[in-house]
Length: 461
Image 1 (cartoon, rainbow, N blue to C red):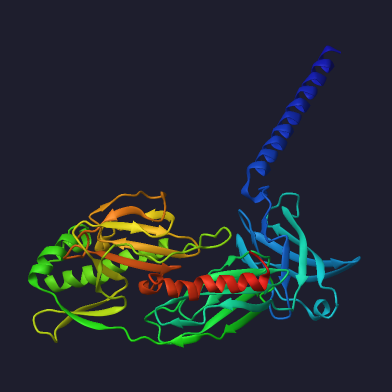
Image 2 (image 1 turned 180 degrees about the horizontal axis):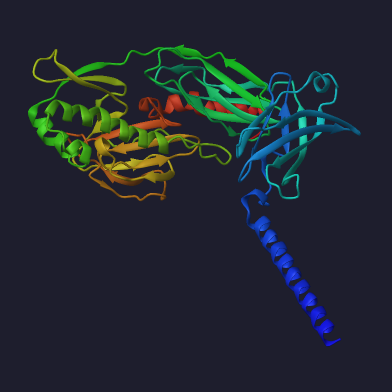
């Protein structure tokens, strides 16, 4: 009997061992499944707005991403209990991102239903839950075949090549996405003005652009587009051309001084190459910096009261805006470089006071290559003024300045030989004719009166 009991105990012990092995295998398998990338548990992500729009021509778009691979995407539209699958795709090739465009089928376009509920279901290739991880997006889809409505309210009566103007207009659409003013080589961003659906913007005719056409462009969420041409008189202007001798003294002096500030230019030994590097490459870098800072359109509160700019009292204009300069070395026919002068040079006495004629915010005071010490002021509504070659700057970045405040002193920093001020005006990053903004009559006719006309039509103050 004792032996039998002992044998039973052995059999019971073996069973426990087997059970423990099974349990360990089960735990190990669970750990393997839990830790294995094939059983990852992160669902895909669906990037789409809550309200999407499409029409007969324009598909609606969305993006699906996953930390591993996307397996399938399905789209279903529903309205009043009716469900219509419009897209289903299994992805055979591994991909963790899918940018999807869905064109509406005739059944949807011909249904006379302009708003649908939309459901997007995305699954990944994980073995978790057998069918993988799933993401679901729910939103609305608008069927929109009607383009925005655009109407002109008021604008400048004419624009001079290289000059500026103002246009105020109405753009209406329940799903308006984008509105801008296109002049060919540049687009101008408007601000909302006083009433819903009303916009205003300064615009410019770039001085190097021969032809000019002003078009208001409005685009809605379904990419319906309206292009509204504005008939405005155009006055062409012939800008002056000048020849300037590049002397050894100039190259060995100012040009070399500027070259030493940039390592890639400092190593240039050939004087002609050095001159081109400063006059063309450094100039472009400096102007790109100015353009990047002056594209901002700061909204205006109520009315925008701008006064003529008089940055230097009793000054003489010593160089015009828009002049194309040809630099020659030795013989007058040996042209070695060209550039455009995009401001007015004004001179009076050495280290004279420079004034801010209008209030604004200082956006830069840094030393900017050929422009030297250069305060740049944002006057709101996309208008900026620039003051180059200053000997000293009396304001700091971010400072609010008031009309009549002394902001700097004239000087010879940058690519300047004599003490003077380089005064520039920019509209949304485009250099424009400073003289217009220095004339009371021009500001009244092209800015103040346009606002007054629009306010009267809109019946606002």
